[in-house]
Length: 158
Image (cartoon, rainbow, N blue to C red; front, side, top):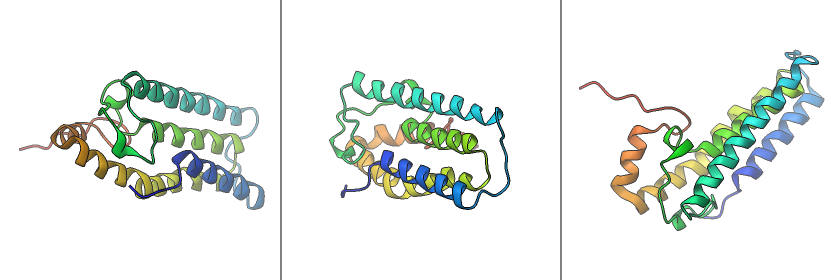
């Protein structure tokens, strides 16, 4: 996989864009004090998801470097990875949603879906190709039962 921008940097760039839009063009107030503090709950959940997923990678002794998925030694399918093929990215989206809630206006809400689009195109799709090459049928089976973002993949009726 060619060198890419690390996903945490993409999330940071999205957060900076969200903050700039909030300051420059704060359309429609959605959350006021103290309700906007609910955003911290989302941020706490996001950090917990990312830490748990990171620890699962460490437990099985495989790489956590998103820029080098081809160096993965184990396909992680347990824990949070049984609900999402990308729980760390789910955590980043939740973090951005929490930040948008905290900011309280409509304009920052461009950040989470923009992050999803960019990280899917620039990071997840190349990761999936690398994992398919590395783990073949095992990855295909995992992919058929676990959603890219969250949930189980519905079974097709035959």
